[in-house]
Amino acid sequence: MTKHLVLITTSYPKDNDGSEAAGAFVRDFALELSNKSRVSVLAPGTRNATLQQGSLEVIRYHAPDKPLSLLKPWNPLHWLPIIQTLMSGYSALKCLLNNNQQVDHILAFWVLPSGAWARKAGKEFGIPYSTWALGSDIWSLGKIPIIHTWLKNVLQNSHQNFADGYQLRDDVQRLSGKPCHFLPSTRDFCLEPPQAASSNAKKNLAFLGRWHHNKGTDILIEALSLLNESAWQKIHMVKIFGGGPLENLVSEGVHILKNAGRPVEVGGYLNREQAQSLFSWCDYVLIPSRIESIPVVFSDAMKAGKPVITTPVGDLERLVNHYNCGVLASHPSPRDFAEAINKALDANPEIHANGIRKAAADFSLPAITDTLMTLID
View (cartoon, rainbow, N blue to C red):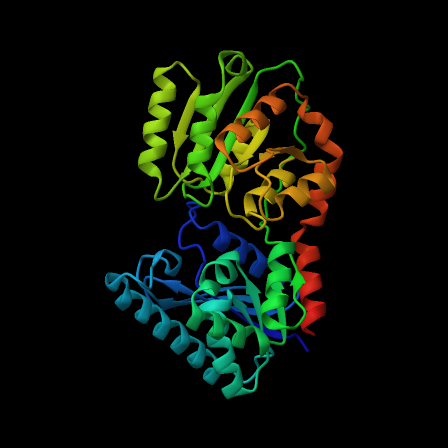
């Protein structure tokens, strides 16, 4: 008999604009999982609604327009939308379970609040649940004493715990005192095999993601300003796409670079097709993060056949060294990132091709969903 899995998430794309990287992973994960099982997804929306796509059912619960990840518990102006989201999400889960005779497992994206909803409802209805942890669950929320205890309780009572990074997996195990399994978060991002890059041609560099302190967007802007004339002579174009709280810094920085005659372009979030076009165009993908597990943009780059230039944070150092799939900065600082760019400009990106192909295979959605089904069975 086909299993019925319920996926609960606070991050799921409402539009195809590319603004929810983690949500894009959950959507593609759910679609792939629906090839193996009946899947119901509970996700925030502007209104209550249900959409059926074959064996995938997406149930939207009403939530404020601002994502929960951008709401701050210490800001009194955010208290009402936080409470509204928490109440709406749990009510939607209870309603689904009351109306379904067969739900075999609940999978929570992410530990809080989805895992807490799963634990409460699972206990009431006798349904096992598992969690998929984000770095922000453990490394940010986990630092708040009361929430730390809540987090630990959810993890300890789950059937299985998953994390999308090696370091994050180890931290979840330490917090919960039980095993946690590494499963990479990735999306369906397949391109035609890229053309071989010339070692002598000017290079194209691309950044795609949130313009946020943790993502090091300011590190990137300052690193570009530190490149000398000789380095810029090896660059055809740098494209910076995304959006977020550092928008003013990015705009001002790009304006200064352009006035200096540097070939830099800036734009907003990209949908899947636009991101594929960007990654087909570039020679290197830039990941200047300060805090990171394994960003979705890393697996996007691998599937696009493109090496990365990255800081040695989270699991990125381990991955780049293991696969030989890019160039590592020695520290997450503008000067060190600029040095890594210089090193990449002097090399042929093709030296990383074999490692990139291996990494792309390891970050396969069918393989990831097969592993998950085995572990929760």
